[in-house]
View (cartoon, rainbow, N blue to C red):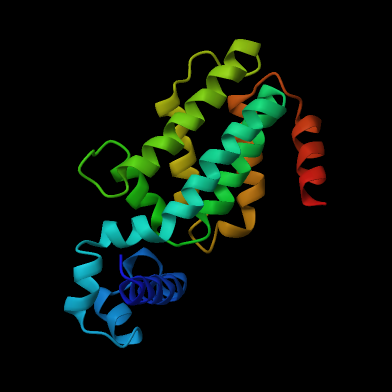
Length: 196
């Protein structure tokens, strides 16, 4: 990409990030173009679909999240890794309103611009779950799809203003169901340590 084209692309992504932060996943493409001081055709030339725009906005965060799963897998006890991953996922999900619904729809659709990033998050989740199951700390009757579904459901729920303040408590409840062998004190202790 030429230097001027790259500069324009980066400007569009920066403006889109601001607009989406304010208005969530339903942000208007026209509003993004207007705020970037370009025509809608210019925005659509770079991002022909809403998903392609969100792929550009989320790729860095999703790649970092997937990388974090690998770090947790290599350095943390399986149950603690799964708990940390779940908390980090919720923090990510709260970064853009409405993004979880897009991801939940994209993770099984290879034609989606978000598919590769969502599939990587799904795969990382499944690996962390399998590791905890092998250790005997996670429910044996769960699959990676179940975990991704619970993560998506919780991400959607904490996206609602009435539930956002209870996000940490809801994580605790769901993780307690996934990791039934962990005492409530262990989950609360790790929550307190992560808050420091």
